[in-house]
Length: 161
Image (tube, rainbow, N blue to C red; front, side, top):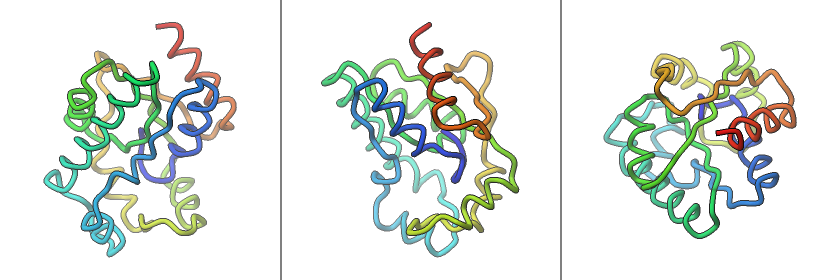
């Protein structure tokens, strides 16, 4: 989880390979209207997000039941979004929050090609982000670290619990 440009897809795909499980790219679960809205530089509303979170959560739950576990990427910026994913997945869900400084995130977004999320929406995501509460199943990591380092930390946390 995390804002756009934090490294969710890079870590998620690596983590799925290491854990030998399915990987679900959350961006693939947005409908065409939501993608068009973001591409036009407009942030999504909760009404735009609920169906997306439900689709992703159901797919995550199905993949985890079929394979024993699964990895998905999702911004999951607010607690109610994380709660919605957990409910839709119908099982145990844990989150890895990738954090970084605004300037680094903006630089990453400006150099990213072929993605519908424009850098202009970064601030709205940062404003929306609700820090996880202590009772939430979240590991926060600094995405300045290399993907292999982040993966090792996530695997350690996931397998120790």
